[in-house]
Image (cartoon, rainbow, N blue to C red; front, side, top):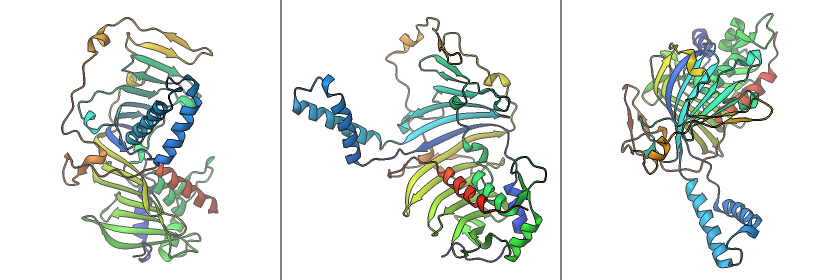
Length: 408
């Protein structure tokens, strides 16, 4: 069925969408999240070509250079190793704490599901501790395995703030689209800040908006009753650019949104379910499609989320353990400080981490929206995935639409 089929929304429905589009995101939060994605699976021919180039380049130093049979066998073994390795999912457990621009992420990364469980210790800490608005880009990193701390003050060294700010409600991309459709430029605003425009809201309900058409129909998503909105260009009413499925009684619960290309084909699908009282979803999946096939899938499972917690400022302060070495990249010449001698690492050699037999990660998690529990299920089959930023495609599309707007 054409996703654009429906009727004009009521003024109340559009106003409720506007409330969610302009809902502020929390500036302080503490969240534990399991993230997974499957790496891009390259065809074996591409791997073979790349490995052959690398081996041929280093052939003069190869111990097998005078034995063609061993040389070929060694190269083939490397090709098969890479081909097998790329099929393993990337799994990361993170604890993310944000406090009014300060950002800290403790994480542990693995390519084996069994190695990630609630008791797994974090191995890396990333912190943005400076204030960019004041020209301070200070950031640092702790590598707990190597007992090393790194500190830098370059803009390019700051850790990327993930999108979890926008996991609740409509999300960043859809909120931006709706602000473009329903908003106007704020008077005396130095930036292109948009505010709700009552006139645009009325135009939508009458089908008189100069750039966009919005339709809605009652529908279901899973076991949820939803209002399904379709937004299309005014000159292409039969081809929806965006589709939004909101809980009929609570528009802050956006279960699914879709981005379509100009021909009407799905490009991005974002799904949420199992919401906490704070508005954060327990489950969040972002998928990118090409020619009708899923080529990207990123999964987030929120184990715990606290909005507006009381976070001590010292967790964002550079304070490595006294037996950590320090690599200070702020001076023109990097300064390296050796750690104090500690034989605990030697004592731990040969020990292995315990494996949790029921460990779960986003690719293996089933979320029951009516339950507080997250339970494991069988993993899905591996599918070839391209590592792309699906959310960025939505942002690009929204910005293209932005350029079409004519502000009063």
